[in-house]
Image (cartoon, rainbow, N blue to C red; front, side, top):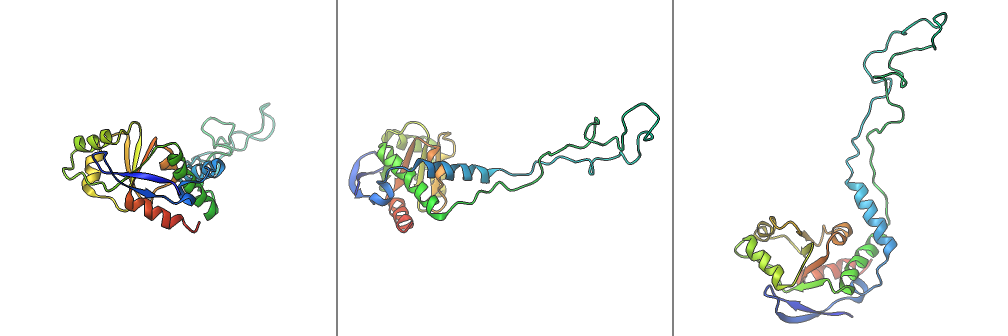
Length: 209
């Protein structure tokens, strides 16, 4: 089982924790992560794009000229697709982009993402996160104490309003709960910071996947 140091907000070692090799120690499954990220990105799409076909465009009820004898091509409506201002052929209509994935694939992808951070030494386990002042500069000091550079996601069992207020002005910092963290969110960051409680909660949630 992989063992990792537990740090406090000052960046000091206060203990260690043994992480489940089933959750944090597997070889990342790239295809599973790709499939889940693709599905999550597809689910973010609104699917509200809409154009009007020839039956929905205003006007065009009268035949523009008679069928024969004019020397021109026959036309039934000025709202046919070939006319300027006419309807659109095969344009987008409201739809859902949801992709169905098996539960085991989702679990494998999440375990792969967590293992990726552990293998790359980009995983930090905190004893707890509590920026009492609620100030951005104090949260930024926590990042410096932990030697974190680049995009960083903090995951806890529940979100603290004071911590959220302290981090909201930091462009490359995001915060999420164990229940709502996604593979897309994880892989969109360079560093992962878990509280000790969050690490245990993830192990329990993914133990039977």
